[in-house]
Length: 275
Length: 275
Image (cartoon, rainbow over all chains, first blue to last red; front, side, top):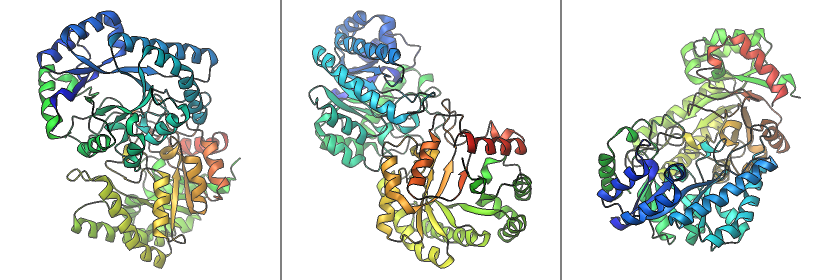
């Protein structure tokens, strides 16, 4: 059983045509206690306005999604990207999120230097840590699935996230986000979640469909795929995690085509039956 | 530079509508010295007939692709799958392949037990090792990309392939196949290729396209994507590998739509320019 107070529904899980006020209203109507908001949506509605909307509805934040993309080999581009990462931390603080989901960025097609991209990411994180501490928002390093490595994130494993945390030595302000969709295949996941321990500051759930047809927008509802989600939840909870279980499902051709009220009803069922 | 004698073109790289005789004829016409043949195609033409065809054309084998899929939790299904793996070793011996590409199999949607699937795979390999030794065909454990974990292979990393080789303790007859497409994202690839050393018995090249649109059939030609293929080749060669560089490109909407003669010409250029 999941304590209903621990449910969070990520903004991307409901159809993208919904505005932020419509989204917040849907959560409130169904008594969903928390959310993680999507940066593009927040900026479209206004950061301060979104913060007021959430506070008025009494909806808590499990995270702010996302900041990062700091892998460029171009010095000017990196400066801009690190500035943007600081702004996303500021925005996270304004909306009241405890952590910012950090997505590293991909590999530059010009230099194809994945090791360089990883080194630059770690440098950038080290530079931004003091700002995160100043605004009181944790940097949640999120390993993405290796199929997102080229374009989205060179942080591909929980081992690497742990290695980066070791190097940054900033346990008070740098943590790790574990997403079932990104890590379920990893032969080392049990050991690396145990190693992460108190670093785990965010836990996302969705399922891997057997007949997945898209590299980004075909995630499944918990129970519809082949991930043993309850096992992964037990692992993060054994490591000490007791905060929100955040449902994050990008699903262009299925869940985004359904009525938001129906999607929320299915989620409330599945976080009990298959999470 | 790649010694042209080290070029191998995998049968799946040319359009699937080609028969095996047409395929072998195309390789011979272009002086391609080696190939890895696709099991379904070989069985369609006949194993003995394919062996004679290749011998008559003077084309060597870099591998036989593939055998495996032994992860089922059902006892009867596992017995059949292990028998089928022995037959694929026999076929590999008949066509004269030095190794059989071993593809583990995916996760059963009923039990969702990935750890169990991995344990069963290792058990099955241990059982089949004596047969591989008897027919003189190496089992080439091939890690596939983690995005193939659900349906195709729970062997997702080179570290796990090395761990399995340690456990099997059969270095004379169990090796590892390194495929650039499957391993390029791995933060540990440098260390795990060095650890593999003489275990590496097969090296496959293709590229990861930035705008990949399919999880299986959208591989890129070397140089068209973001993998630093020359670096990976240097790593396997530093580990002692000096055999074939095998071009294996599943490409439903691009290379399979082109004239085979054009595809081979591009490959001959790219194995020099971008491999």
